[in-house]
Image 1 (spheres, rainbow, N blue to C red):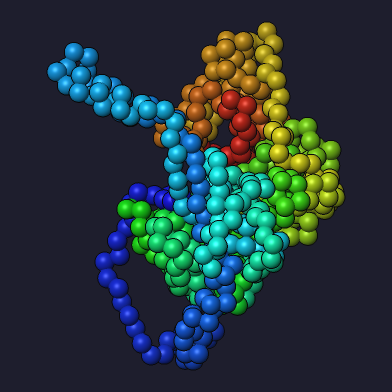
Image 2 (cartoon, rainbow, N blue to C red):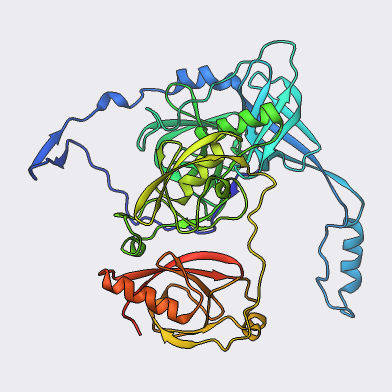
Length: 490
């Protein structure tokens, strides 16, 4: 099974510069100070470590039934002189179902035969065969998968205890940027192979909600997927999952899902055969620097700004749209991505203390987490406006109107109340921040607005308070988000 390529191109660094000797760093008083080189931190050999962990690393071969009729379709126009030739070729291709094999890697995590690999290695497989370092093979059964983190758990039955490796702390010592790591697996189907490098970066996000990838320059190629990334203590701190490559081969940019994510997923798959993630039940967005001035009591762009609270755990706990979540279960919330990871890692049913910023004051709440799987946020049903003639105006580069049946039908408005944006000045701050005709403003300054006069009053209040911007809650197709617009713009 091939390792995922996440991009088709990569920039080329024009030169490789090597320097030797002592590094100089600025001291606190601005004077350069000498930093002693740590020559003893580089391992003389990886041989002992490779010998220690190799018995627990496995090659994985999957077999899948592929339907027939997979040849080229419609490659020549009807009536072409080549039509008979390609019809004969297609007939040869359409010879019924056939078997297809693929390769990947994995590692044993328990003496009784549990094996971790990537979901994409075994996805759709009819048969899964495990080959051990000794050359022995066993058939594996699928215990469970988590496509969100691309992790799968397998199980083999053996008469003897199997050699295994343990998870390490991917946030602890030995897992810093610059630390040595070793990757093992089955690259390009060549069999057991070892590569070494350093951790190049941490906390990389590729495409998933729960991503926490370790970036490494240890060679990772097709077939390495699902293999372990070891620290120098022989502990697994990552599962090799993806590469950035223009040609499918290693260029020194590989990604391993961190053990902090993998361990939690594996525990749930082992216990339940599926994941059971915590669910808060809010819609959120990052706090941007231009929002800080518009939110009372906020001094920096941290936290997760709640845009909507449908029925669920958050509503039961008293959370409101416009609240900024500052802490979750005693941990600071730097942004929405980290909050999603915190909530997803928390047990279903756990009572969690949460601190939110509301109207300039910190409010302590307790939420009982639900289960993420199977739950989706539900938006309010659409409701048409009344029969009154709405007031219109041009404010902040926006042409505004009250909600009418005509506008509701024209823009497909899904909001109970608010102000409809019918036109946006293309040179305005609003246009630069993605506001468009058909959007509905439902809050300004974290207070509900139902008329243009309400919005004007909120803007006047913001200007009187010396604010440079005002926070608007804007809905598009039922999807809410906050936008900070500069006040005083016409």
